[in-house]
Length: 336
Image 1: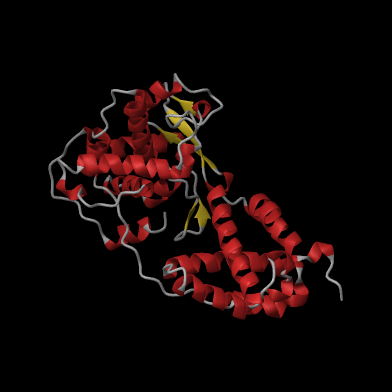
Image 2: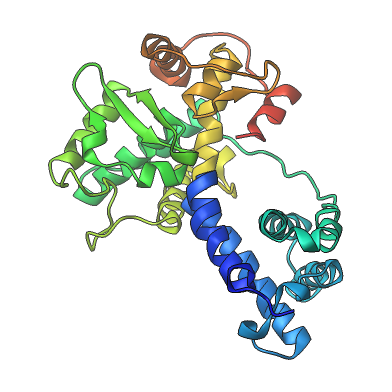
């Protein structure tokens, strides 16, 4: 039987990215790129294995045995970790589930792929900065030039809001309110919007950027006037960590990523005694697994959170025994 046009592999790949990931699931641009790269690698591997072009591949070629061979290639030939292997498998599973919804005749074929288990991977140690370390990194920026002022505003913003780097880089001036009540509207995963209050120091640093940026353009831009990239932020953060390490030995040889700042924000909030439900809402997590229900805190509660956070982060020094991370904290940070 001739394969119908609507049921062709190409048509289903297109509808997976355009209709399902983008329209129904509301996946982030980062997730879409990751899934795109995984499927591209798989189709290149499959075409080489079948000795034909990608355009000649069909739904009949999407078999469990081929997926297992591809996953083996990811680890042995590309030398990716088990974690990367599992990420590729997650992308393929999502795509195969889409195929199953539109091609029920091959349900058994797709079911064997969905039954492929993830591989046990080593658990990474979650990294976060203690408040005094985060202060040292921010203080390492000597805001004497416009670019340095941008860097200081960016680091303050990441630590203050706990925003993902993609969320921070998408912020426009029109999303900021820098007079009282100082706040920013952050667009998170799945198009979910949340309001985060800002420290006076963060608002003051951002105010310098707003003067030189149009309201309809991303706030954090590079020397050429184009938006900063994730790699650009990682480079800047590493530069200031190395600079701060000259006076803070605990930062020497530390890998501090933009996501480390998000973990550091969560850690400081926990140290300040803030409830997990409030922290999840503050960072853009709508659900709490232990209660299986949705929680939305109001802005006043968030401002109370921010005051407690800033107090812990160093505005008011308090004597007492040193706080140490508990296993529960590590487990919580791994979910962010």
